[in-house]
Image (cartoon, rainbow, N blue to C red; front, side, top):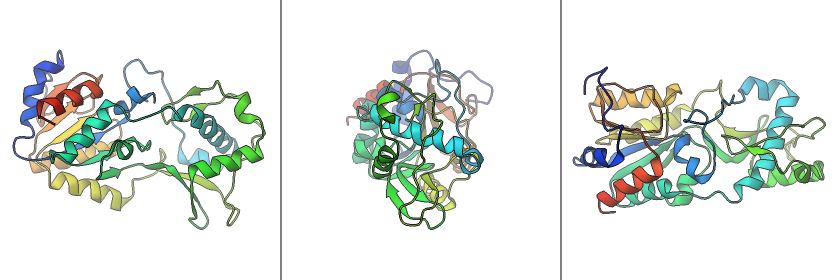
Amino acid sequence: MQAGSEPFGTSSTADALDPLTSLFGAGPATILTGAGISTDSGIPDYRGAGSPPRTPMRIDQFLDDERYRQRFWAGARVGALHRQGIEPNAGHRAVAALEAAGLLNGVITQNVDGLHRRAGSRTVVELHGSGATVRCLPAGHRWQRAEVLAWFDVANPGFVERSADAEITSDGDADVADTAGTVVPVCPACGGMLRPDVVYFGEHVDPQVFAAAGDLIEHAHGLVVAGSSLAVNTGVRLVHRAERRGIPVAVINRGPTSIDGRGSVRVRIDGGTSETLSALAERLGV
C-alpha cells in the first residue's frame, strides 16, 4: 500500500483476517500494545473513540507541587478498589497464546497495568515501567505499591470510604475531587519522596528498556500494533525501526493512528483488540 492510500480492511475485521494471518507466514512477529488492549478489562483509554479528554500528570508537576502528589496518592488508593476486579481480557490471553505457540517473539507494551504478565505472556518489555512498584527518589529503595497504599490508609483514616465512588481514570487510578489535607506517604527507610516506578509525561524511556524493545523487532518478521494511536514518540520510533528492516506492519485500533496511510502498513483494522486478536489466534490454530 502506498502512502496516502486508503487503509486496508477498516470496514470488517473478518475481511482483514487473511492478510493479518499472512503476516506470520515468514516467522514470529512482535506485538506493540497500548491502552486500547486494556479497555475491555475496565481501564479507560486516554485517546480512544468515545473517551473523554484526559490530561496525564507531568513529572514536573509531581515533583514540584505537593498538591499533585496528594492527587496522585489519593487517586492511586481509591483506584485500587476498582482494580480489585480488573483481570486480563481475551486480547491479553490471545497474545499470551500466540507467544506460547511461537508466533510472537514477545510483547512490547506502553501500559503499566501488568495485565500481559498476568495473562501468561513471558517476554514482556514494559516501555513505561510497572505501576506495581514504587521507589524513593533519594536512595532508590523499592516497595510494592500495595504496601505503600496500606501506609496511606494509616495516615489517612476514613479517606477511602469517603471517596470510594470516584471515577476510575486511564492510568487505572481514580479521579478524586477533594484531596486537600491528604497525607502523602514517604519512604520508611530514608523519609524521602516516593514515586511510582513508571515513565511520566516529560520523562524519557530508559535506554536499556528501549534497546530490549528494539531487539525484539530486530528478530521479528512483522510488527503488530494493537490498541495504540501511536501518539507517543517512543512507539513511532519502534515502527520506524520495523520500516528500516523492511518488515510488514499491521495496525489494530479503534480510531485513527499516527501511521495510517504509511506504505509499511500492510493491514489496517479499525476494530477492537479483544475480538480481533482472539479471531487471529483461532485462525492460526492456537
